[in-house]
Length: 204
Image 1 (cartoon, rainbow, N blue to C red):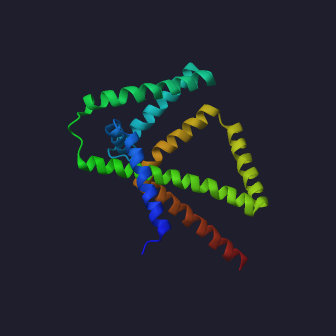
Image 2: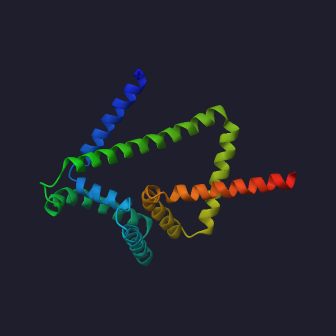
Image 3: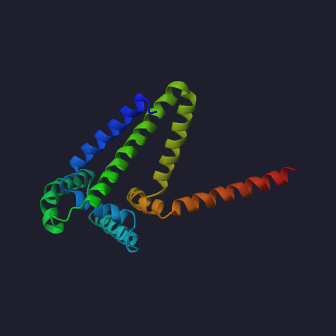
């Protein structure tokens, strides 16, 4: 039997998902196309993603805009997309081609986005719980993590580092769907186990 708290959580999840679906009105076909690309439904999608990302970053490198100009152009593109996509999408994709299967997939995407947002908020809250319960561990963990990030930022060019992060984030859904991440994590675990066994044998 479900607990009252579980029912509230499920109802809240459903409400947040429905709200997000409403925000995506007019963007449905674009969202589904982006989802297919990010999950690599066709073999050439990863190359297309990397090509698009590389082109954008090459343009930024070539134009070398200031921070203010870059932020302004980015927000301008978002505003144009917010205005043009809902207007042009029905003409490009057709307004009568939306199916129940597409609606279900859009619902799943919105639900996954809401769950991901909840996980991030949960991690953020756990960080503050750690700060309250174990301040020394919190302090040492934050200082160490930030020092490592600062060192990496000092060694790698800002734009190139941003390029790597953006590329990885965009390729992550496809890597996960095709089991590539699980494969490499498994390989890493096996190598660590081998090293631990070799160390135990040396100690014996």
